[in-house]
Length: 167
Image (cartoon, rainbow, N blue to C red; front, side, top):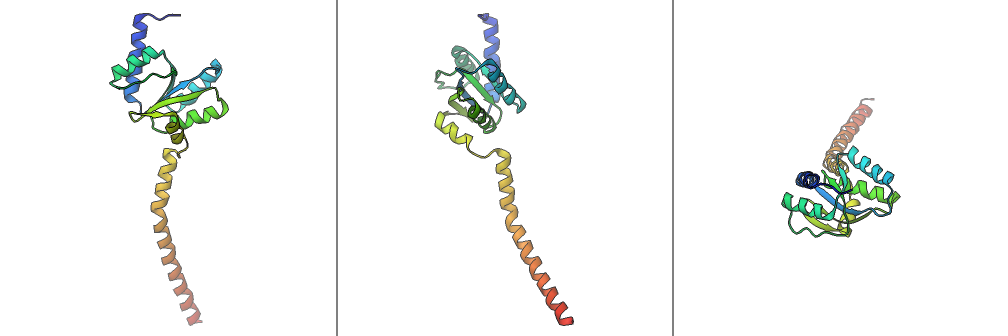
């Protein structure tokens, strides 16, 4: 079913708006995926606040131009994962790919920098934001905990010695 010019303009406007807000974007091919699997991917991404859209390449190109993103090189992909976080949507997509290898990531855009398939796959293996924050907190907290234990141990030892002398 062909879309009217007005419908296409609306798609381009929405795409441009989403591109301006997004922090990551993945170009995917979905050949071989059933509608139910694509719906499952959409639901998975939507639960975390991201989007998956299938858009014609010409409309994608116009959306990029309207969003002010230059040097867009259309690939054979026309499935778009629009992420409003840098790493989370990439991790979600690669987790989905483990069960559904028909979905393939061709390239992407992370923080307005075009990336190859290999670079994006590297990002998918990084720990998530919350995990990294927890590691930072643990790293900062660890020396303080050791100092506290050392000071507590010495005061206990002194107390044991004084108790032994008293007896």
